[in-house]
Image (cartoon, rainbow, N blue to C red; front, side, top):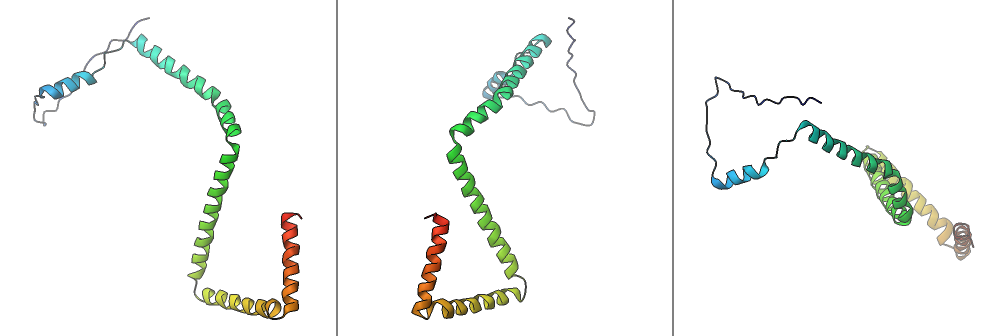
Length: 149
């Protein structure tokens, strides 16, 4: 295999002034530490091949790693997902209500509807003892449907 010949090319412009900066001894040591030994073309290709093989083996096993991770931490991940989803839904609901309240005449209309419903609910269920018992029975029936007892 024939190795390509590498040349170092210096660029200069006639318009730019030539400035020479002499580094101090500490920055010279730092520059020497940063320089890398030049690699031949074969060594560079081998390193790239090794990196590629490592990346390929990791990516090939990634579904297995993720499957084990999700199987092991299923409950905490579901809990975190539900918490995150509920926070997002509350934020969206509040943003929607804020946008609706900014529309003229909708905010007072909704307040009026809420006030009328509250007055009706108090009149219908809370003024008389028999109606309060009916409300308690309805509540117990709803609770048994939700809880399952």
